Each structure stands twice: as C-alpha cells, then as structure tokens.
Length: 551
Image (cartoon, rainbow, N blue to C red; front, side, top):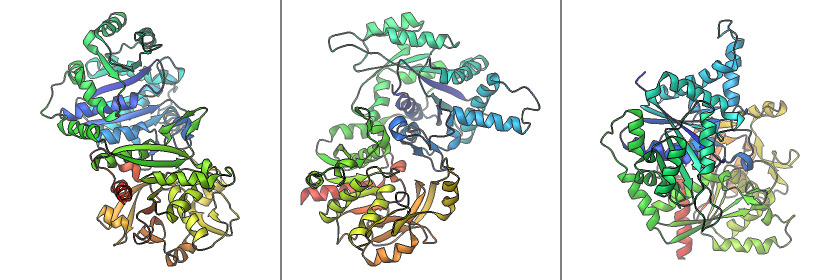
C-alpha cells in the first residue's frame, strides 16, 4: 500500500456542529490540489446500519450504489467530491462489533482471548485501510460521529491514538468545535472549546487543527486565546463562520489557508490543481436573484417544537443543484401533509388552494400511514390544476393510488403497506419480501441500491435523460401491482421507465398534453444529484415550474 495519509475529524461542544460538511470540504480542497481522496463516516450507534433509524431523530437515510443504508454525511462526501462510495466507507459501532464477534465465532483470532481493546480499534483501522485501498486514495478522511467526551465514541478515539503512535507523521486530527455567544453584543466564548480539547487530551490525543464554528468569523484575539490555552499555534485555528451555502465552506476555509496547514502537518507538497471551477459555480449561486418556489409535502419535519429539514437533505440539495443550473434562487417551503388531510382538517380545501403559489410541489419518500391521505389530496389537486408535481418513491406510489381512485374509479384503492384488505391493492409488497415481513426482518431487506431501468421514447423521462437505459438508487419494499398495470395504462397513466423484464414499474407520468409535469419515480434520483452535475429529472421539473410562472 502507498504511503497513505490519514485525517480524522471529531466534534466538540455539541452535536450538529458541521463535521460532515467540514470533512467533505477538507476533502474538496485537497482534491483540488491533485490528491486522490476518499472519505469514511463512523457512527457511534449500535445499529448495524442506518436503515432502521427514524428520520426525525437521525436525519435522512442515504443509500449508496451497493445498497448500503448510511448516514446523510455520506451524501455530502459524494456531492462535494463527485465520487461514488460503497459500504466499506461506512461503519457503525454495531457493524464493528458484529464483525469482530463473527470472526471470533469462526476461529478468526486463532483461539486468542478477544478483547474490546485492542481488537475493536484494530477492526476499525482495518476497515479504514480497506476503504483507502479500494478507492486508491492518497488521503483518507474519517469523520467520527458524536461529540468528544461522549462514552459512545471512546473506542474510535482509541483507534486514532493507536494509529498516531504507529504512524505519527501520517495522521492529522481535526477538531470541529463550536464557539457560542450569549447575545449580539457579547464576545465569542472559547472556554467550551478549551474543555473539548481537554476531553481529547484525556484520551491521549491532541488536535492538530481546530475548525472554530461560530455565527461570525473568528478574530485574531480569539484565535490566540484558543491556541495558547490548547497548546497550539495560531495558524492551526481555522475560522468557520455561518454562511448561506454549505458549498462555500471550502472557499471559506482556504481564506485561512487550511490546505497549507494540512499539507504541512502531513508532509505533503501540493500538485497543480485549484478550486477555480468550484469557486465559479459557487459565485453563480450567489448571483442568482430570481426565485423559484418549491413546496415539499412530507411528514418527517417536526421534532418537538422544531423543524428538522435534514430528513429530506438530499432532496433539498438536488433542488439547489438544478436551480443553480437554471440561474435561479430556490425558495423551499416545508408543508406538513397532515394539514391537507380531509379527516384532520375541515378547511383542507382552502389549504389546498395555497398550493397555487408554488412553481412546483415534491412529495418525497417515506413509510407508514401518517399523512398519506393528505398527500393524496395534494396530488389530486396538483393533477387537476396542472401544477408541476414530482413524486419520489412513496410519492410515486401515492400518485398511482390517487390516479386509481380518481380516474379508474377504484374506491378503496391503496397500498397494502397501509391497508392489507384493500379491495384494490394497486401498490403491493414484492413476493420475495413477504417472508421478510412475516419474520419481522426489516433491516437491509428492501430493494436497495442501484438498479437499471429502460425508458420509453417520447416521454418526459426520456427527454430528460436523453437515453434508453439508466441506473438509479432504490430504497423500498412495495411496487406497482402488476395486476393493475394494464388498467392504469389504458386510463392514461404512462409507465415511462421499467425493469428490463417489464415486471417492475420505475417511472410513471402523465402525457405533456395532459399535464406540464406530473411524474413519479420508484427510485430516489436525489441520491445521485451533484453540484456540477444536477439530476436531469430535477432540472426538467424546475423547467416546468418556470414555464408555469411565465404563463
């Protein structure tokens, strides 16, 4: 293996401090210097993967090409670095322990006494090296989930300590820490960061750099204070203020010469590359002033009195990417599906009329019964009033249900996920999945990862992709029931994308003669959208929204 360099990113003071974006941004900067990068996310949960986690607690479940259900930060890595990652780039406490126990059961340790230390940290380091080898990386960035001082990530910090002892010149440790202030007239407080560094010191680690997250840029005095109290140099303290777009973070870091610090720490020399293309793209975002307004109707928003937009982070970013291509400033509003539910809101018809102000509406993926009747009411209103509609996964299935009820007149049409006794189960579980459900075997048992789809010519889908065969990422268990496909098509619903054997319907749409843009995908196109390569279906959707605005 080449002389691999390691960067570890840990968080201090509080969760949600921006470790994922920081890791992705460091990677983008080093990538722009000519180095081959890959990134690893370590989650401290005992869950084997992120697939069974509630989106309102953990945020979006991101899916990789190979079907790995993982943390949303993996999406940040892919978007910033423009690479496709695999399951080797993601691990949890649960997956690490599972691997060690399985190896012990198979005599993989040759009869030795298997202990938490060193065997768990060694498994962690082994996986990091395997990810680097698979991706032919010069530098591998590993983000440690959680916050320094928590019991859950102690073993991951121990892995870093062990590696630092073995390869001190090849390892850099970055602490992303938060600097609070009480009000607009107070100074930024460095004491919480000092305590975070002391917590790191207690594990035998000293940060090489601190990324100081704050509402404003760090001044020289605060940098000096952190450096002095934490045994560091002033140039090792990088300012990380709040900004409007996460894609500006790499540019912001470079203002404090982050790449110079990292390369010096790792003993590397820069190669001939730069951030010009990325910088130009970010500048184009900032120049966009004409708005395009998109509503997202979902149910994974509220966590107590707060709104968690991370539940749909990839959808949000995909809209931004497409809007940037079209030179528009996206204005996204979060709409609770239950507000449109006829059984919960007596004035739902009045609420539905508010949808006319949007350029387009998205119903994203999800599971379960809550909010489904509200989504059906929304989709019916959008179809009848010719407002651009984009349904993602569950959003496509619900559109098929609405079409079956309203156009085919199939009263009680539903998905068997909600109503197993539906007289018209237009959406049904795949036969191979019925055994998993019976055994309550939910983890990693859906149709996951990348699958091909054949496109039908002279459709919205074909005009967007401009090719016959596409590959997209899936995460679902239910499908359009084959028994109803012919009836739905005769009534005017077009299945413009399908599996090669024509058993699985991948894209449904209405003709442009009937509607400017009414399209749903069984897959998740948002997972493959990139800043400099927006997903074609999102672009087509926003174009339809802009055309509506000009009418």
